[in-house]
Image 1 (cartoon, each protein chain N blue to C red):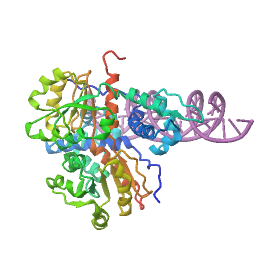
Image 2 (spheres, protein in one colour; image 1 turned 90 degrees about the vertical axis):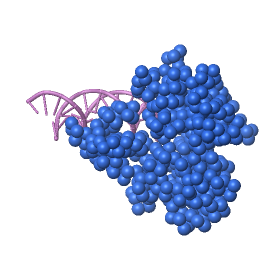
Image 3 (tube, rainbow over the protein chains, first blue to last red; image 1 turned 135 degrees about the vertical axis):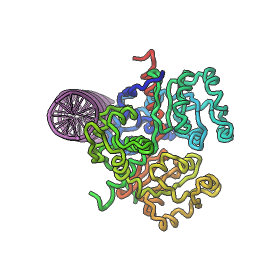
Image 4 (cartoon, chains in turn green, cyan, yellow, red; image 1 turned 120 degrees about the vertical axis):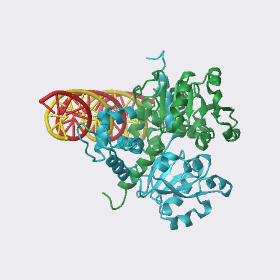
Length: 218
Length: 218
DNA sequence: TAGATTGTTAATCGATTAACAATC
DNA sequence: TAGATTGTTAATCGATTAACAATC
């Protein structure tokens, strides 16, 4: 029943990936009482070129003022809106292993507006959600409770073997987006999107940088 | 003393990011006793086009055979070698919060060859490393022990406020690569590389896909 | 006014995709 | 031989960078 579709193409993906980092910096400045920021300041913080910052900020449609910079408040609002921070970031967590549980306490994600309304796993992992005050349920009740919760996003942190089985349940229960921390490539119908995170790919990049940065290497 | 440098440019970064996923698939096939694999098979598993797979595999320098495909064993060996899986993946973990601790049990990373030789934090977090049998030390001893361990990689999972301070210690102790899970952009000298992971950027991409995949949206 | 910073337009660079010849 | 699959070469696409005019 479920088919594989090529994942949808997103325009300006690299820019979108950088937006949360801009948001962090901008919020810091806002808290400090700053009103305007230049592309060169943001560039220095982000370790990129100012022109790239200006191109990125184009996406927010906020117009800067020559000699002054960009309004920090406008940028924050616009980025938050663009990313949908405030709305639609209600999620459930499926799979409360040590990794899954750690997401519940992640400051970066909370700052971004992610709210985990419920966590599901076998009962033995219940304790892990207590500290974060997230309601815990047996995984058997996933389908039943999803019907009631009106949640769009599921964070998938189950063992890889169970990933597709749980995905099928999530899809059947009306989930629209799956944030996939398993090492499986999930098959989902067209109206559902997935985003796979792969820690090993980051490690691969680190290794590549290490090799290419060795003093003996050129 | 420490300066900011533009992060070094890595050739074929997207390909390098995909290599760990290829490796997973190839190892599965190897365990099943398969000997050859076609680009179209890998493409289907990876949700990409076969031509992209062939281009990616060019990097391994493994030659395929028309009508037959690529030798699975050769590909595995070559990718492992390319990524430096077997060697140089000894690391220390600094910051044993729930997230940091969860990395100790991550199967994907262990499959990739990452070995955490020691973990550092305040004593209250000692318990978290026990289950994973990783030696735990007070963070005061970081500098002293790094001199002895001959480790190239540090995994940084401390609170963002402490990130730069700990980084300076790591750099002074001879660390060559820092895998940065904090939300700080670290300043390091030229002979040290960093790789920053940002969970929020993955969530931003998921949100973008959700918005662009809404039935009402076009 | 002079000078700093934005924003536009064009150039470059690199990744992906396409077409098809080579090969087993 | 016929046909499937690799590998090469070229085309396309998109992201980054550069140059500089516009603007406050």
